[in-house]
Image 1: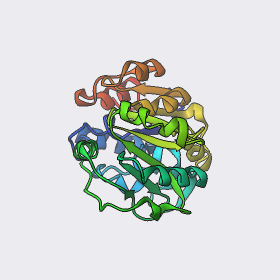
Image 2 (image 1 turned 90 degrees about the vertical axis):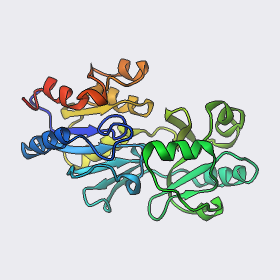
Image 3 (image 1 turned 180 degrees about the vertical axis):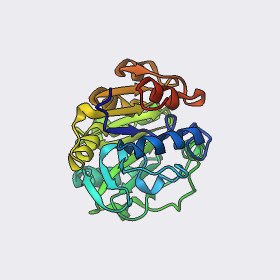
Length: 265
């Protein structure tokens, strides 16, 4: 395990316990030591870079955001890689939104995140992730813009009955880690694609990487990385995709995994 050169961390439920504002102090300190030893630390999240606001004093080398569709440097501005939703699908979901009560969030490469309506599901997720309330905006605002990810809210049954993924979106796929919403990303993309572009930029081989995650949207990167670490609070299918299962995020999960890997004492 001494050939590890990069660690990729999901945020919510992995680095940061739900309901907390930042990673535990012992995790921040451990990753600082690991980084000083020449191992790069990256974030790999479903959040857009503008929503990565809960890392406290943790310093990282780059961000794989929007489920792998937007990779940026440590300055949070320089784009390394982007994969946008095809405009035909954007046009169809705009038309869909005019006759549906399903809240839709659109995440652009640049600029503010757009939400077209709010309901109970939005309020629950916003509370869980401690995100600010956003102004309601018609989705017409995103027509002809570069959108790397969208989110559809409401129960899984409601989303299924809407025909969103069977009738509306032809070139996108859902990925989810919470029952109250799903992320909408281009077909063929996930966090593993973002990791590939990040390590290419930093001249690191995939065999030299470790990925940490707990959600369904982490399965691809856990299977793809040199070593995949699932949190103890992960669902069974996430744990099955990993090489190693650590303890819960609330029970020193990251610290125990780093010790298992021989990266800290």
